[in-house]
Image (tube, rainbow, N blue to C red; front, side, top):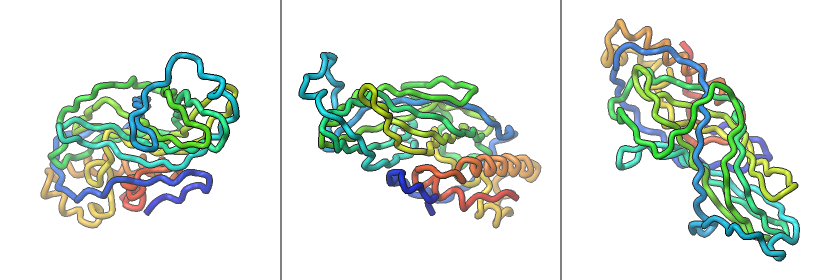
Amino acid sequence: MRTPRSTNQPKAKGQSEKPQRRKLVWLGTLGTAGIAVLVGVLVNVLSTQAQRVVPPPPSAPASSAQVSGTPQLEVDGVSFTPAGTLANGDIGPFKIDIKLLNTGNGVAAINDARLIIQNFVVMPQCASNGDFPSTGSYGYKMPINSKRGQVDIPISQLVPANGADRFDLLLQVPLVKGPAGPNVYLYRMHLYLTYNVHTKPLDVGEVLVDLPIAPSEGEYYWGGYIAAHPENLSENMPRSAIPEYKRCAINNSYALRSILALPAMRPAELAAVLPQLRYK
């Protein structure tokens, strides 16, 4: 089930499948869910429409043939590759794949991607399935800030007149562990692309991003299956720990609903979470 999108938003294609349910492993005393801000992004300008690596444009001024005419950018499509564990044990980035069309008669020079953070939540891991790596390796660790705000990601992309282009935004955060495991951060952001001088930014739309991994039922939130089979909890954790675990999971369910209920483009795995949430 996908959340209905606004008619003026580009089509977002999820690229993940719902993972199989796995047993929970109790890891001891848990912390309660909290709310925090994490502003962290990394951009890597990748490929053209033909999947070729695009080098940065030369620093020399563009020729008169390049700057003549008026560009007109349009979003042709937005798709997502959720973050996850790589073969070497590292955690890969959350990828936003943006396809653009330039229907004007001038070159469009994209300067940056502007991410306006609208809402966010941080969710502690309430229990573990036992196979998530205990440590993570990140080439880039982004700053953590206590306020919502704007993130500008520098970009060097040229979209030819009457042509098309494609590039990716790669978003990462440092691995921050709570008492039971790694925290998950969920952002709702409005994405704009700025290009050329004195040109109105291109409105890509609202996007949902989960980092460093997607939240899973049982580990991070109270869902339909676990609510219907509470007897399974006593098989995986001490009875005395169940009330604290349940409070953590239900708090995370409310936090997830606060963002997932709002319209935004999202990967398929996040679109499937909202109808699974339970609160008692």
